[in-house]
Image (cartoon, rainbow, N blue to C red):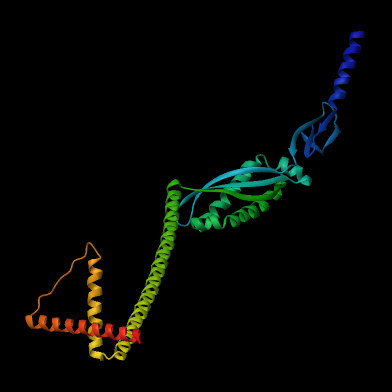
Length: 304
């Protein structure tokens, strides 16, 4: 008798224990009674009738993410793989539709993503796919929202997280990019070389100008010195022709002295006729005579 009582008490405790269940935060539990929908229970401690009610399933109300890889072709016949990330959640007031109307939500979402991407991407060139990826994401979200709202799912966000063209296409794009950068670098180098040439030409022109100015100044001073020398010689009774001859002879001997001071210099003597030699000798004697006259005149002047 006592054993039956213990068994009855134990059975009652198990039944009572089975009547209580806990639903986690951001979760919905679906309770059925004899296989028929009874109620939806949310977070907290819940009660059901043991052996009659049962929890047929639980749905998370958190935001979930599904990554879908779609391979398609662009307008310029380039195959590309796109990774579409779909963020969705079960609508709290439509848990019944999400649980009973749609058996495999992931497959349903994947099908719609494939349909939209393969309808939008073939209208674009490869470069436009990279530029307009947000337009693709918006189109996917709009299509999914209209389709999945009926089944109790809210599409929060869709993102194109990766665009992966064919390997050969990527290598070609890298070569094009490298060639473009090399072209730009060559242009900059050409500009720099042109600027260097222009500046060098300007410097050379300025150098020539200053050199010419220096030569002109030098010749001006030489002319002024010759003029002053002629005036001095005229004052001591030497006419202009004799003064010019004396200056020429002086310059001649200055030149010979300068040549003699250089160890590696060469002197070329051009042939001339005896008559020309005689004239040159007469000129030199006249020059020496004029030089002596100048010396005597200067001594007399100093003696006075």
